[in-house]
Length: 484
Ligand code: BG6
Image (cartoon, rainbow, N blue to C red; front, side, top):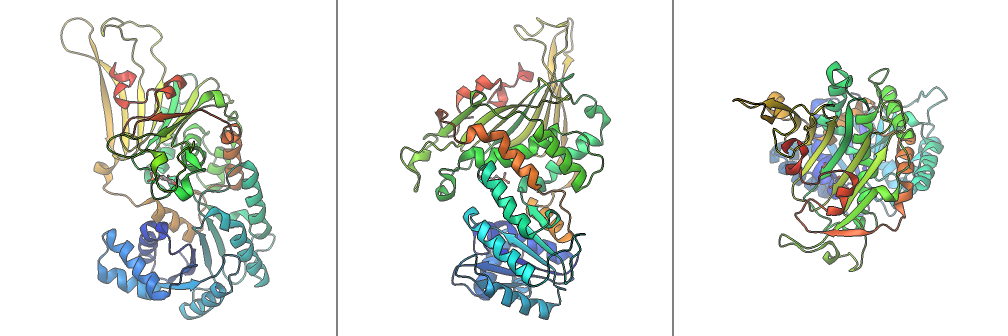
């Protein structure tokens, strides 16, 4: 890891306090070779204000006050700007810090900003890099230190805007310099999906239309949109969650084995499977919005939300992949807010036995399929269901499980942002979204983005609108077929 200056745009925001400062603290503690952080914001803050905010964020994650303070004093600085396309105060301060800390001109620019500020900021950064003679040559070599551009989600709001944003980025930066964040990719168990699939021949040989009946990607959340209606209302779950986080999980589950386990190998396969994914159809999508329930107000009662808002807080969509491996296997992506439990998992339902030898042993039940549950949060791990004979005469069967629990095997693991920031400082783009990947992910959902879909109200604390069952899924995990 080389010394560098980490320029954090949006340093006064929530993401910085809760996630980025704790992650930067851990990453820079590991590397004692001079990381400095220059926070940028429009608020009337100085170095002291930024350090106080960071110390608060750090102590909440268990860092002692003394350690947090010592780190903040040494590492953090602040530059105030009037507008994000006028960055002279940032560059002046950056030069001073670099000269003193000898960071070798290496810079990471991290944009944790509202999407409307992306184009102006990227242009201003790019023009500065060009004028300072820091732009890489045709071979990607850069003199005077490296530059990396890190962009938080959302990357555009549809295909056209994502293309436009990529255009602005590529006017000044090479794709290898760009790190588009999807924080799900930093989660340890999401990366473990790759190992699970490609280090275990057992499952990979079953991973196709020949053996899999359907795949579900499920992210149920208990949180709601109160307090962030300004961002969420009008954006909705399709853009906030499905196009990015769930689509990444889908792509990692459905992609072909990469030629190599590096950024190019993995991202190429994800792009390929997204290209093979049929454009979603409004007939195969269900939207919902939480009503009141569990003593909580409805979505439309939140401050900042119109009483007649039709923004979806739940979305389920069935996708189809037109390739040799997956032809005919539905992939159902589903997520919602204010649901009964917080749960992120991928469910792979295998085909049932072709002959129902034991039919009748369980009353009305069909033979149960084997289901592989890859649990990404909480209680990270795997669970494979299978049937066994119960003791006694006759062939009575019961479903049992093989379980693997990640934490009891390995202990706690790093936060997603820590992993991602470590990769930015190490120059590894594997866990970041490629330009074409972002565009393909928007392309898949184009017909849904402005479609006038019915938005079904569901009770807060339920599993979502019953209408979603028409996509061939079971909303309540306690009703899964393996418990039939
Ligand atoms: C964010 C979304 O990107 O991810 C939120 O904007 C969502 O709406 C969050 O709640 C979920 O992330 P995690 O890591 O808490 O599962």
